[in-house]
Image 1: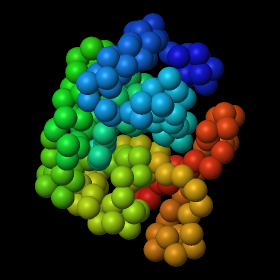
Image 2: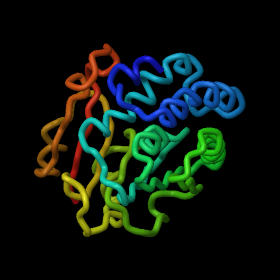
Image 3: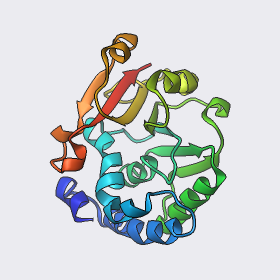
Length: 206
């Protein structure tokens, strides 16, 4: 939890309580349904919560924004972002029903009122959103094909509507050439921990 306060010192009391609750909730539910690597649970705040919150360093979502988290797994990046932006609506989807069960329990346990969790696949998801977020669930070109249909045209935020995609390693020239409007944020510019040295946030306007 201290690593969250290190980079986000101005949290409201309710947000601090919600972030503090995450460790106990994930530890309990992860022992029943594996959504975080067993060896990684002790690094929950750095490798999952803070990693998710890197999106909040790139953009401050305005109230009323609608965000779709595709392949959310145990609720990342959606749940940490929903705590950070209580006036933004988040829809979290995953093709694995057990994972969505955990997400619903975490949402309930933290008292989040701005999250909807659905057991569905990206290709079957209807509706329009301002942004689609995800943590590297597939190759980027494949992901774009799946979710392009879900991005609406009404603009609310400083960044154009589009995709915010967390991934690791280098982004090759072939990928860059496919998406000429791509912006790449290096997470080591935001966070000094070693974990973030090779991590990137890719923004694709759609």
